[in-house]
Length: 379
Image 1: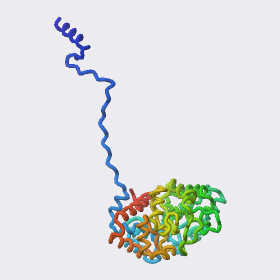
Image 2: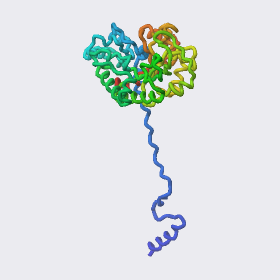
Image 3: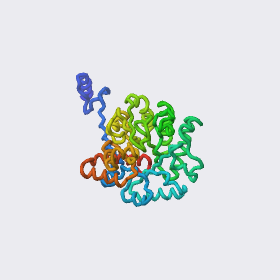
Image 4: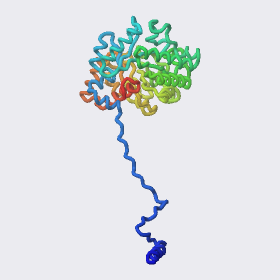
């Protein structure tokens, strides 16, 4: 009787907010559920930065050079300086066979502390270093214009794939192509090397080549920023380009933008003096031109000079000064046929404070990032 009375009293009390004996309050289904916040994962280090920080200053400076492969002591030079890469020219293929060349290039890689970029200009048509020799291919690779006339962009794509396969089989990992210059006049110096059509058609060509080279794992270099136009040959002297900036934006920049969008890894800057951007310095030595490439076109890959011993540069300044100006302008790599002179000039400029160590490090990081992308260095 007492127990029944107690339960009755408890039942009457519940509407007034009291709870039954030793029972927990019922959970409110509308109450917000608070979950512990996940612990954020620490940011992963950039493999390229980690690698560069393991190099000495001297090695970092050497990584900035895409040097013309010397005809003597190339193995010893690669071992002594840890050079960023070698560019091969016709003499490097003359009197060679595919087997002997593979052995030669492998010896460079074995000598270098850091895997090297091994590059070549195998554009097709008038500029071929490999297929000029029957030992490597029965006929020369055709020009982009001839290929397109033969079979449109599909023929361009298949030709690019064949080039990539041949170069990779020899130990070459970079083709300094495609030519992105817009030229529709056969009278232009650059026309025979260009696609030969308007900006939009040239953009489609560049996109096709870059996408295929990326698929094949072959390094590419878009050239010759900001666009060669109808200028004279800078191998033999200074060229002045007085076209308005709007013409570059509406035409010359478009193939480069298409290549960047397609995943281009490197861009080569020409030696023309482009007055609408910098009326004093050749483009390759101009911070203003590099700012346009980085900021307006948004390119964050490797930027390199054309060869710093071309006459457009030697007429303007000496070899050593050119190399220092090139680094100060924002180039990550310097193409050089006078490596030792220019390497020593850049190293001295860092040591005396003319160039900051951070500038060298940033450029070397981009170079190493490219090498990782190409599979030369494990990430």
